[in-house]
Image (cartoon, rainbow, N blue to C red; front, side, top):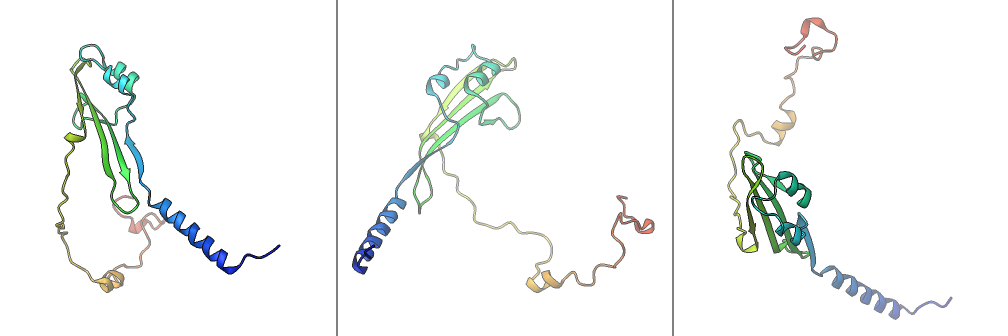
Length: 164
């Protein structure tokens, strides 16, 4: 079998490397959360549907209200994924279904991308109580603290702890 000249191998390697690098920098699209069927989601009617019909039509909600079971949330976000950057939301939909005391749908709200808000994280640190130990105090600080008695539950009836 004839061998390829070194010059052709170098060209092939460069072309293949450039092709893989270019393909890795492409944008991707990802759907996170509930997958909406717009016809089914828009078919939920206040005063007509109840909890069972909503769950049968839309499935289990993404999230339920924190303190009661009277509000269900179906949340879906479409994001653009780029290799180096944080994902950007390109589409967002929240379907909020509220129920009255008898379990019948009382209100249906739709929220979109324009209703999203950025939440700024606080960069401060929460102080912890107690001593601040350096590395050596953490490693060697427990030397000599333990008595050498048998561990709890090891069969030594005289040194049993409060749990047995």
